[in-house]
Image (cartoon, rainbow, N blue to C red; front, side):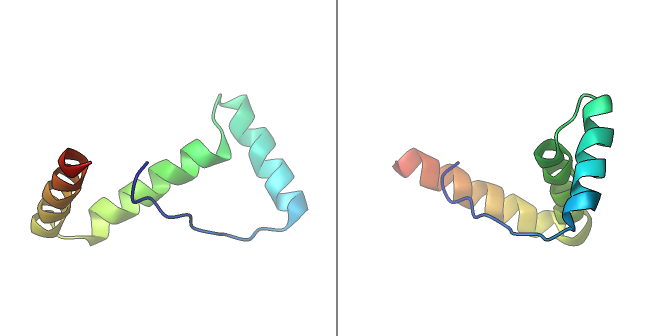
Length: 65
């Protein structure tokens, strides 16, 4: 994904193993679930007008590529 940045998080390895296992039982990966959570946080905190402006900026960048 062009323009994407990586976000680093930390969790104790035992907790990560348990979380990964629990998510696998639900057919999910940690990356999928965290991406959903990050998107929910973005929608919750960033005003609709700002999100619209960002969508337009991203669309313009993709067209320019």
